[in-house]
Every structure is written in C-alpha cells, then in structure tokens.
Length: 379
Image (cartoon, rainbow, N blue to C red):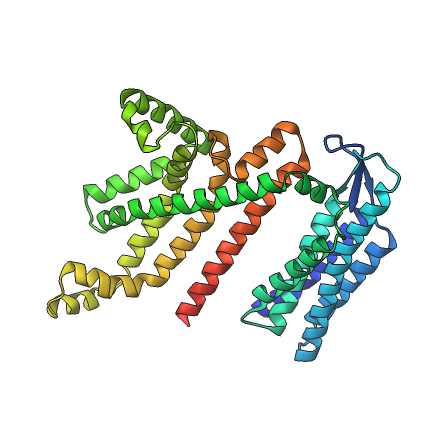
C-alpha cells in the first residue's frame, strides 16, 4: 500500500472508530462513589452527530486535497473533539444533579476511544494544512481547548477533575519529583554511557564485556532489579555507615535513579557507539593525515558526523527515562509512580489516571520536543 493510500485510509479508520465508540460504547459511568463500578451511560444522538462530523472530516481528507478543503476538514475534526469534551462535561453535570456528594461521573470507554480517534483525525487534518508543523498545531488546538474548558469550570463534574481538586498539591509536587528523577537518571546514564561507548568502539574483550553487561541488565525484570538495588544499598550502608552522611539511602531517590539509569545505558551506549563509528574510514584517515589527535578527531570529526544517530539514541533514552521513573514509586522515591501505586492500592481508577496521564503526556512532549529539535538541526 502506497503512502498516499495509507494517508487517506487512516482518517477513515479514525472516523469509523470514533463513530463506533461514541454510538456503541458508554461515554460516562455513574458510580455511587470513587471505588465502586457504576452504570454505563451513553450520550445518544449527540454522539452520533459528533461521529458523523468526524466522518465528514475523514471523507474530505480522503478526497483530492486542496488548501481550502483541508482547512474545512481540520475545522470539522476539531469541532467534533470540542463537542465531545463539552458533551462529557455537561453530561456529567446532568448525571450528578440531585445525587449524593459521593457520587461520581466517570469517563467511559467510549469517551476514551472516541477522544483518541478524534485527536488522531485532528492531527491528520492539521498535517494536511501544515505539513511541517501539523503535529504541534494539532496538540496546541486540542490541549488548548481542553485547558479552556477545564479553566472555565465546564469539566468540574467529571470524577477525574474532582479527584485532582482533592489532591492538586500532591499531584503537582509528584510531577516535579518525576521530572527530577527522570532528569537525574538520564544525566547519570549519559555519564556512564560515554566511557562505555568509547570502550565498545574497540573490538576485543572490552567491547564484548560491555555488550554482555548491558544485555544482562535488560533481561532482569525491573521490579526484581529495583528490589536487588534496595537490598544491595542496605548492605553497603550497613558496611559503610558514613555514606548516609552523603545523602545515600536504600529507600528513596537513590535506588530509583540508579535503577532507571541502568536501563537507559543500553540504548545510549549503542547509539553513541554507532554514531561515533559512523564516520567513513577515509575521513578518519584524512583527519590523522592532517595531524589531528584521537581526541581532536573524536570532537571535530566523529561527533559532528554521528550527531543524528546520537540524537536519536538520546531521544529514545529520554522517553524511556520518563516512563521508567514511574517505578521509583515502589522504592519510596515519590514522583507520579507513587500516585499510580496509591491508586492501585485503593482500587481508585481516577487516582491511577492522575498519575498515569501526566507520565504519558510528558513522554509524548519529550519525544515531540526532541524530534522537533532534531529535525530542525537536520534542516
């Protein structure tokens, strides 16, 4: 299938998913409290109308494109997304009218699947209008309207909003902690990966040792690895109590940062080594002929030529650090992982989402930001 055919088929698939989700699946769930499953509730004809609006946008995108029709498709897809946001907010308010204070209006599977499909359709339309900046434009429009709706109080009745209001301070603090854990782990992984990548450039026992070490870490389940780190650090601190004065502890950020960094080393080392080895042998020979030292060759030849590969590895590791830092909640490091695991312990779906959704959003933002920076440098 050609790329053109695929680009036309994907909007139709997204619109079909939106119609099916909004018509056949519950958009909201009315529960007696935050812990008990509730009764599914659809939105009826408004859902069908939003689905048809999405279908119109998809049909426009599937037809031969022009600037005017592409803008019309973007407007239709965005209108469907905005309509879904408003329908869920107002529908939740209507469901809770006259109900006890503990009652909750929870987003249903139809809202999640329909929202995802409409977001994808809006992104496809935005790329048709803005080929280079389509993803950024779509994200700005979608999140901008969501922020306006939330700021205007239109989503106050949704269970997720109620949960956030009750824990806003803790969630905001956990978000900042998560950023710190992910950034510290990425920095530590870079500090370790650079010398390992230089060792890996040399064929021989050192290179095989680095490969074996990194592959060995990857096959260990993350939970087991973090538990082993806690046990190992406990033993080390028992042998050398003075380390506690340096801020080291068996529980908290230290094992979380070390454990996360260990898993980031494989993509970083392989990417760094591949980037440093990307230079043509003739170019390296010319550099030596010009009298460049190995260090100067590394900085002035290998690094510039291998920058795209190295940037790709850094992008992968940065996204992984955001996700893996969630496990820090298991070892007392805080962050959004602590919110997720607290929600799991309470069987509270909204509390789990309060921790998981920012992690997903942060990972997507990091990936998009680094991709944009990489593409800009390449251009």
